[in-house]
Length: 102
Image 1 (cartoon, rainbow, N blue to C red):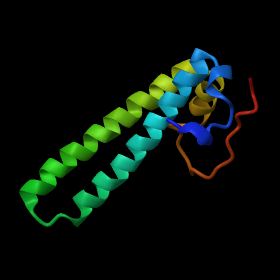
Image 2: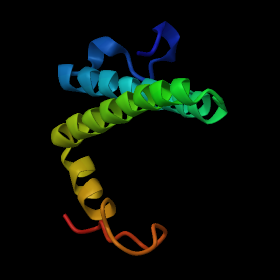
Image 3: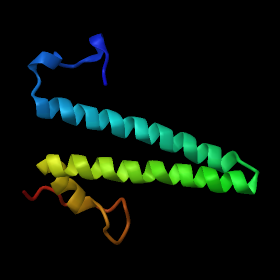
Image 4: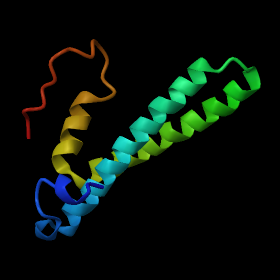
């Protein structure tokens, strides 16, 4: 969570839903950082047994990341809409996303 002077808006002016979404986004950011670190540890490791343990640890972050994204998607209709139009599609990732539909 943001500390004192880092808030864009005073927390007391925000709804419980906005504060919860902020908590979820902060958890996503932290999980991405941890996933990145776990990926780097796994990549650099030379001991085969430790690599297996580090891979399991890394995959736990991937599962946590997926759960957090799903939590956010269920609570934000526009995010739900964008994710449904952008994810799990065939073809090039850089192809235009037609998400202007309601």
